[in-house]
Image 1 (cartoon, rainbow, N blue to C red):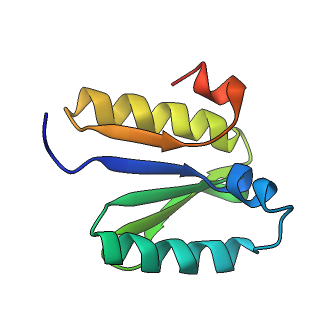
Image 2: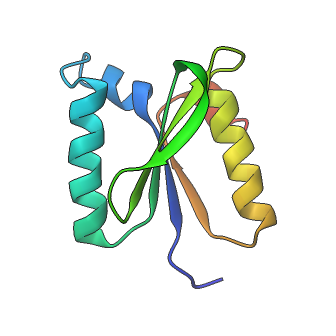
Length: 103
């Protein structure tokens, strides 16, 4: 649609690509800086958490915890479908082949 895309980031997949050199906190901090510099809205999706929750971290990043009942992959599929239904351009940043086949 020509609008600024929404970038959904598979956080643990990205951390795994760096052999978990970055903590979740460090990844969120770095991604918040990058998203603000690029003025690109991003959602960092992470596994686990005692409940599903999402909170803003700066003007261009939100962090989502998938919660105990689903995986981050499930949350990424859900959020991708929501964004598409809302008419947003959306991209998912992952190298997870299983996830790629679902979004």
